[in-house]
Length: 297
Figure 1: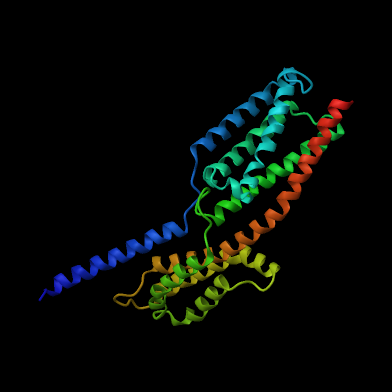
Figure 2 (figure 1 turned 90 degrees about the vertical axis):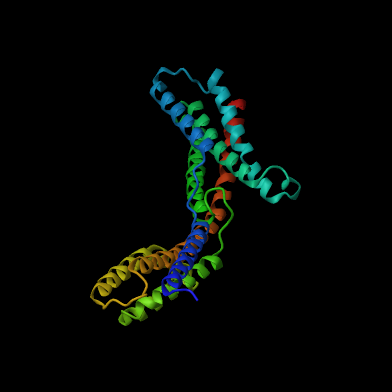
């Protein structure tokens, strides 16, 4: 029969293993956007090219009608057309075996940076004619929309190039962590109802779109107020052996708030998909009109 000290050691080892397992699951579920070196290189190269073009714009070394300027216009428009292949890859079954979707998405983002940069250099940072202004404005809207989409995509997926996260596993993870919080609430029963309302607020689907937006915008403030009240209450409450810690309570509040934000990001990404496509159609329509106008008149 083992000694009490050995039993305690086994229990401590089991507890540490369980904590490590939960930490690994949390890292998988709440993965942050991963950085990609090749994409960083594209960003740096485009930034350097635009900075160089901006400082020499008054020298008029680049003219849209001829030479390098004309070639940059072709390159920019070609990049904007080719980046549509990502959308085709997602929908066309015969392309599903052609390279992983991560590679297509990475190429889509790179072309979305190179194309507009080449167009700006092609225009020498000037608005030009009316049709050129409309085309350039449409491109700026699509680029801005693409940046917003990139942010939303990274919040809904496991990293920038990971699989889409699901709400149910996130909910299970938060509920598993509520056991430790429940032991803490035994020391501060006055806050049990507040925690129940916060859990309901974080996990239940909003009844209206406006209510969901309000929840998305305010969940951080609600979480902060509840965390501050809990810390103050714990400081006054008597300590209990084996009870959960303040860190576990704060961690659970963070996870619950993440659930509400995740629903908000999912909704925003859905809306973004509905807005981005018409903007792309507008861009290619105005670009085609600009190209025809330039070559016909």
